[in-house]
Amino acid sequence: MEHRPPLVKHIESFVDSSTSPAQQAENVKAIASLLKNDVITMEYLVREMQLYLTTMDHILRARGMLLLAEVLVHLQAKPLDHTSIHTLVEFFTEKLTDWRALRG
Image 1 (tube, rainbow, N blue to C red):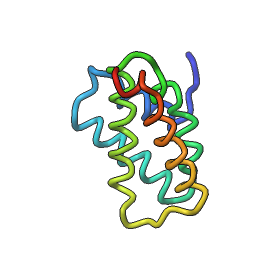
Image 2 (image 1 turned 90 degrees about the vertical axis):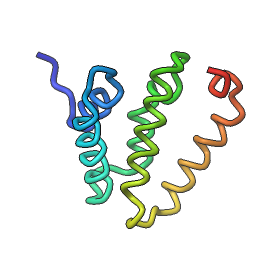
Image 3 (image 1 turned 90 degrees about the horizontal axis):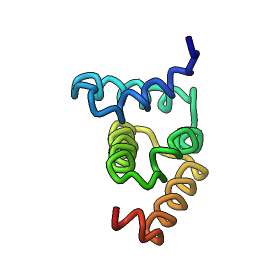
Image 4 (image 1 turned 60 degrees about the horizontal axis):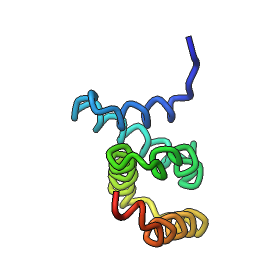
């Protein structure tokens, strides 16, 4: 059996269309908790989600973007550091200039 880190399991479970809304919410909370407790960084999360955030499959990409947005909502009380802000701004700026991501 393949061993996957907990973060990857939560990401894959969230983007899986068969996952229940309740389980999706648990995945979001688990990922937000990893960020809040400084177990992972925002940059690490975005890198791990790269496949889902850049795929040409617009359904998977939308689910990846939704996951990222949901996690950010859970982090409202935790200020992001300069590196995290830079990573997010850079990522979303690149997506805005990528017509394929916008027309998906």
